[in-house]
Image (cartoon, rainbow, N blue to C red; front, top):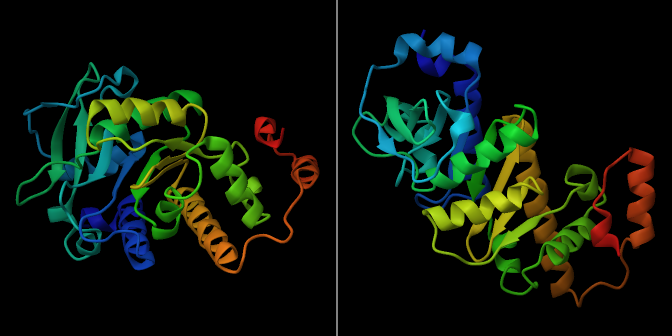
Length: 272
């Protein structure tokens, strides 16, 4: 058996190709991480090396101590992952303090994990705590329509949430808590990691203005589906605006009724 025959690795690779085929990953754009389950670590132990070269993460994530993650490589292209996984992705292990990481598989021709690793791990840390260990996926991509809207919509959680909720009835069902927005910041460092983690305390979605979107989820399908729904809503919004703007829409009372009928904990703050 090869490591790529193991179920979670197959699903990880499939998501990277699905995102590329959507057009969300120009050049080396976007990144993706998965917190590996304990029973899955046991299945891949044979393939892991004993590398002891730890490197600083840049943020402290003590509740991720000794955890393993599959992550995309810095500067790597999503379209190449399915062709050569071992050269384009890595498995890393966090040290016992949650301050450093080491590569234990992958990036066989050299390289480092994604430059957004501090943001990924900070988000994983938040979601592990808030979801009682359920959430394991953090996915970042560059969908054109949602990025375009960051140039015209006010950069507030309420404005983006209501705009996306109104475009498809399914959207408040898929993300009833709403969407968070991070104003433009230089990517790849501690500051944007902390800012994004603050958003992730409230929502499962963080839009980076003029850059892209982060989604968090329990598994591959739900996380990809969340991003897909938001980008589709953004596309509909742009089409509606290009046709002269809204002539009618879902009333706020409709969202309240939807929440009641579907037993949703919808964010009432956005309906005031």
